Length: 193
Image 1 (cartoon, helix red, strand yellow):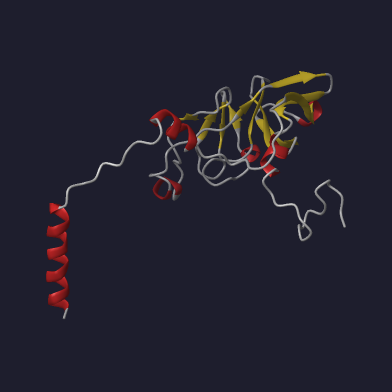
Image 2 (image 1 turned 90 degrees about the horizontal axis):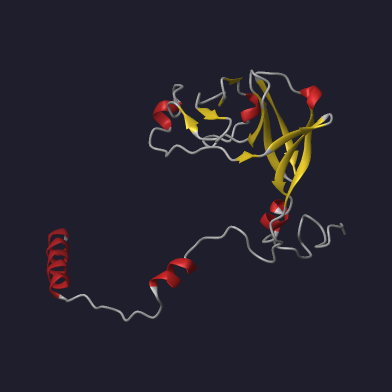
């Protein structure tokens, strides 16, 4: 029985090689097709992107060589202070494991992921040095493409450090969530039942 199945499979492979491939007529231009294949993580009605400086932390909470975390318009932000006193704002989630970057040491224009040991530039967010040098992450994540951190504009004004973020980012991300009678978030207008 097994031998007959193998022979039948080989015969079908030979027959399929003899059949000429069929060229399908092009219905759309390739530029239009490429534009329509882009994946969008936002569904539903969205608002226009609007960037604004939002107060993140008090300057009194900051000290050189360390970082703190803040939530600005629903975004998790890491406010890092270099050893020279320069203030930077980056995404607070490590691209590898999602650990808070605010727990990592800040030194010489870099912030280091506390678990994997990957260092990121405070100015650009790009990986500086080896990707995931700490054991066992050097083996576990060797095949993952290195990814940087998002960088935000930061300014000190008065007693606060403010970060420029898209104030509609959270609303646009959540626009695709179903809003109905069984929705755990309550009514579509933000109220609760």
